[in-house]
Image (tube, rainbow, N blue to C red; front, top):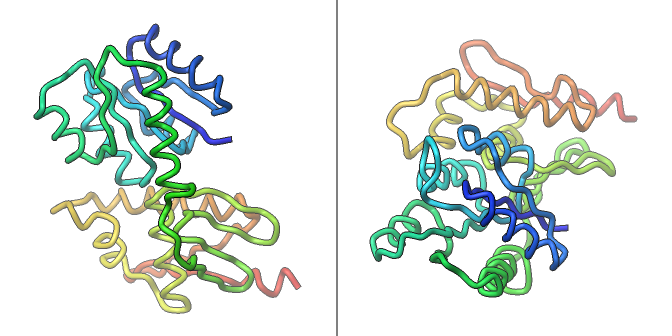
Length: 234
């Protein structure tokens, strides 16, 4: 079941959208904590996001930029703002489409289905899928998935980028500076602790696969993939 996340602070509109979209067999979650939208995004890992612009604390443009750091899932803005510049800003901040309020629920559904087809279905670009593999561990960059044996887990964009670097560099070390440059090349300054936080998340993903020492810290250099579990699996 494909998952839709609704970020709309008007509860009546959010509930109306939720009830209508669920009729078509999609899983729908409405965000209620507008100060921690990304926390819910990580938990839900949606296939598509419906996003209002006028939100408490931070606007929809801000949250779309945060989503784009983690995912390429379609984002459709839904807003009462009808100005041309608002629509331009929505697209320039990472949005894929724009719907003005008041809206037809059927138009919303048509645009949702269109974006899902383009991203994942019949209109998605067809090409041979890349797979990185070491010691039975398989990483699918295009799907942002990691698999070992019969178990597969989903990754955020940053988690996928880190794992891709580790697997491409193995058995060499993936340097901290190289990781920072790959992950945040659009920013002039990044707190070193930000990388540490994301490495911790990557370790937790490996732990979900039963791998508890998969990422080794190499002091003064960076991180290295540890595939010593290969012997344990025999």
